[in-house]
Length: 114
Image 1 (tube, rainbow, N blue to C red):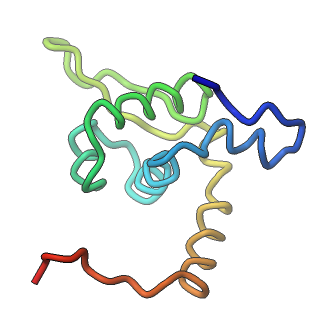
Image 2 (image 1 turned 135 degrees about the vertical axis):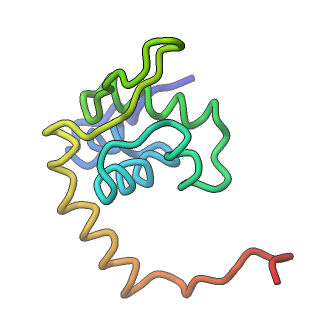
């Protein structure tokens, strides 16, 4: 499996960190709601598999975008929060939101929902 784009371009290098599916939505929730536990993140991301969420959280933590804080000893449980590096993505998230509002397709419920 290849990791990243392997390009010098700053956009490609940024996508190496935050470009995986679900990563920006994880960052959106942490930016809007503050520190969150795994279950809270999972509830806010309908359709994400627990193993995928776990993998994205580990990647974002390894890149220094998020960090964890222990909130329960037995069993060990953590909450996730943005680091300074993660907080610096706030304007990017706001710009994506504004772009989606202006140019994104209108939202429609998935088929089968009545």
